[in-house]
Image (cartoon, rainbow over all chains, first blue to last red; front, side, top):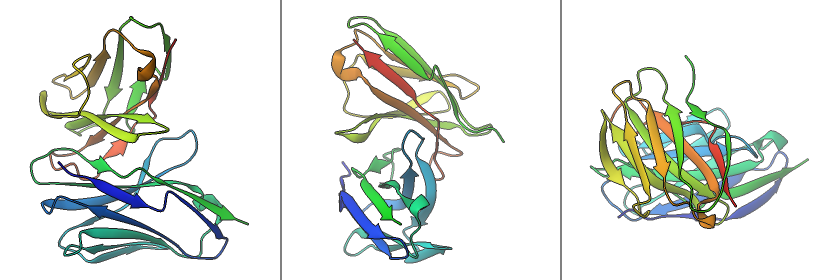
Amino acid sequence: GENVEQHPSTLSVQEGDSAVIKCTYSDSASNYFPWYKQELGKRPQLIIDIRSNVGEKKDQRIAVTLNKTAKHFSLHITETQPEDSAVYFCAASGGSNYKLTFGKGTLLTVNP
Amino acid sequence: KAGVTQTPRYLIKTRGQQVTLSCSPISGHRSVSWYQQTPGQGLQFLFEYFSETQRNKGNFPGRFSGRQFSNSRSEMNVSTLELGDSALYLCASSLNMDMRGQYFGPGTRLTVT
């Protein structure tokens, strides 16, 4: 089955810096890659997603890139703000497996 | 449009008991997935339902079961509770069977004593 590895597990940046979180997946049939943000005590929130026919997608300060050949995708957050502090999860799905497989999460801390 | 709702929000049960959790998806969403979230294991997939059919099941023992009703609402049941079942149980719904645009409910915090 699908396996998603996520790195780093923790990331601390200064306000205004950029943050990058990377994920690799194992199943070449995967074709959908969402990212979720989970603040403490809250539900995971879908922040951006990308499909396998697209190499990059941007939404204001966040962007996701996908390299199908290498089977990895990344989340980029620019001009980080303290409210970006949260746990970020990557996930992958595709084919006929009818499920999202999640990475273990990255705790991002943005220091003012 | 109302989001995904889950009831109850908190539960305290004793080992050996059973529990039923409920999930109401976003109106019009037909796929419902369930996840177990623990600090050490992250988000673990339990099962997914679409049009009342279970299409996939994660690596959990048979004590974990679920179902989906014709209005897309879903329930999951855990029998013979163990201490290790203490976790946040999240359900998520998506419009179609392709799992895209999956939105989570607030979760049910289950504590087994």
